[in-house]
Structures are given as structure tokens and as C-alpha cells.
Amino acid sequence: MHAFDILGDPVRRRILELLAQGEQSSGAITTVIQAEFGISQPGVSQHLRVLRESGFASVRAEGTRRLYSVEGEALREVDAWLDQFRRFWSQRLDALGTELARGKRKRKDGE
Image (cartoon, rainbow, N blue to C red; front, side, top):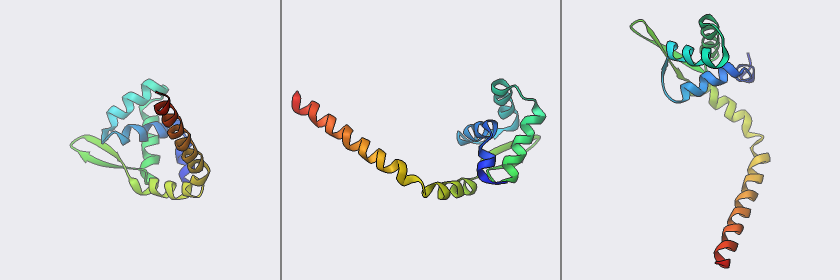
């Protein structure tokens, strides 16, 4: 499965957002995802499996708990793919930075 097929699902994106905050138990993830998306525990487990098998997340056992965390390699691959498009927004962000600086100078000079 292609990385953007994985990331195209809002549930999986949300799980990755939760994992970006730090290691999370499957129970904690399930609680949030059930509340936000209304899917069952087996449904959440399926999404976690897809993230794990695609290299976006890893899991480790701690007693009876399963703790998930983000794996950076798959995200680095996405970042590398996006790199070819950065020029489209980087130039605009640079221009915005210039305009903001110009506006600050005008306010400062006008005061």
C-alpha cells in the first residue's frame, strides 16, 4: 500500500496525531478514536495494524498492555516525496515573510 493510501484515511491520520504526542496504549487510542469516529475496538485495532504493517507505527508489549509509537522512517519517505513540491509553497511563504516585515517597518516608521 502506498504511504498516501495509508495517510488518506482520517482515522489513521488521527491515530498518528495522537502518537506524535508520545507513546500511547491501544486502550487510550481506542477511547479517543471511538469517541471521535464512532468505530468499534476491532475497527481501531485494524487501523493500528495497518499503521504497524506499513511502517508508520510500532508496538511494544508492557505486560498486558500494547504501547504504540510513531516510526519516523515512513514519514521521512513521505517528506522526501513532498520535497519536490515545496518550492510551490516556499516561494509564497518567503513572499509572505517579506510582506510581513515590510508591514512591521511601516508601522514602526509611522509611530
